[in-house]
Image 1 (cartoon, rainbow, N blue to C red):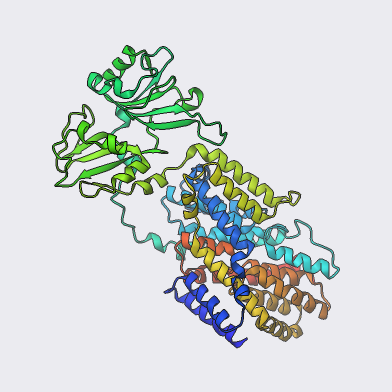
Image 2 (cartoon, rainbow, N blue to C red):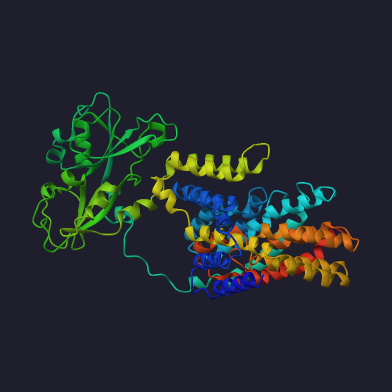
Length: 620
């Protein structure tokens, strides 16, 4: 027992200190429990197979898909419209929406779903996400107190009551308690988060000198010189290869890309394919050519080849063509800077070999502040030029392999990852809704962890990520390791008798002072233990003790068991007491001390309020 308490104390010290990463501290504590013989290797590693840990990993993937498909941005923009320019309104909306969702979905699932949405909202509103993410986690726990299924400790006390022969709680027995929790939380978090969680905004971050693909398109004014041409059935271009048309020489214009109706039969696939203007590509009926050049030249080209020059009134959806602007889903743009001794110098664009070797087009040249966008094929490359390259993101990334001749400005693959797959947003939304429904309704025979795993796999299979690697990158392994390594701590405390000794002695000493003092003792004992072990484990340990204590002094056990579930769920002063707290820690760049500064006052005041409110709702 002594060794367990020493390890727990050392862990808490290093968590608070913050100089060592929290997941490393947790792993060290786990190893010490094995070395000291407190836990067997199987017991120590049981956390890594825990359903909560597996669910968290799956929810990271689901949340990543919500962000990657642009669904987070769509939802956040609607909430932002409701909030207007008021930071307070935005804060209240986040708290209320999260609490409502948290009443019916696990608090872990709620945070994983809301996290990308809240980050997107904060960025759009030019506010640091750290201002909202910790309140988001706390709101999910508060909302969980609204219903029977909102949080695992609620089910624990329900089980304790029914096993002891008492009348079971109804689905909404918890709602009055949850409403009080939410009100207290909102009132306290408004000033606390403003004071302690906006410090990261005081230092302006250095803006990256790298330009995004969208910024490059604007800088080179591509949209102003971009026109769409539709190949109709009677066009002379049908079934001809680009290299046989001599378009650049004859008309002084360039095909930047071709968009074609997708041949995929998969209902989850996109309906339009983007294709680079490969010289060997054969043009087909209904292809849309995206052309760079002057309006007069493009118009002449369209008339002479029986093409239709599309105006801006035709939409992609109605006519199976794309709006007249560059999209960056598959084909992107980047700047390439020739080295001073590059073999490209004094070589014309048509002879530079980019298209033949890499499948890359040169759309423009920036030279001494001027932008050359027309008649590029015969333009010779000079020292100091910046070439605007267009191609598949993977092909642009391949250019970086040859650093002796040129440098690709920025990181193409990183830029590609920033481009959301908007056409997949409905698919991601449908998968998310089905996952929530499966988690909410007990009539559906799918365990919550299975629902999450199915949703995460569907997000990958339906193309909500570009590839599987992108899905794995969304998992925050620090949070996963932290929770998995700390879960066995509760087993160690229980196995050595430390948790029983602490809780029983506290309760026994307070029982003589009346039910209200005993209730306070049970509440704050639960609250204290939950700072070091999971809230579910704490509820399991203390629920029978609270029930027995109430019976011994001859009062109703209901307020005491509610004290256990509220004390276990309303633990805010530790990042690993509940999964939501751990989920937002890396995204909000929080330290252990941030949880102490914001969470501890909230946890204490919430406890004081609950000690007086619970006997009013559930009399002794």
